View 1 (cartoon, helix red, strand yellow):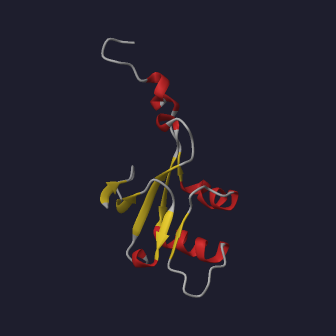
View 2 (tube, one colour):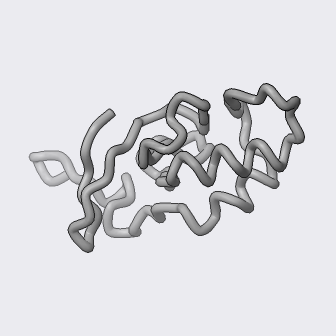
Length: 107
């Protein structure tokens, strides 16, 4: 886990993940999950920053798990999950796109 500061200077505790995941042990701890959107080009991917508890509640309701539900990992992002995450997206700005990055020699 790490600390991050938003553009409006709010400090967040976040856990970096390779894919969306939630677990009972993180509930009520004010933790955010940060993970990349699906895509083949890492420098062009959007990212998602979402509070853990709403993600957990989404998983609990959307996938109708048994009463002992404790965790959920998504190996692939479903359309339902992408719909939930849409307003949590950190969109890559065009000026930071990979094709605008130049090497030290200017190429």
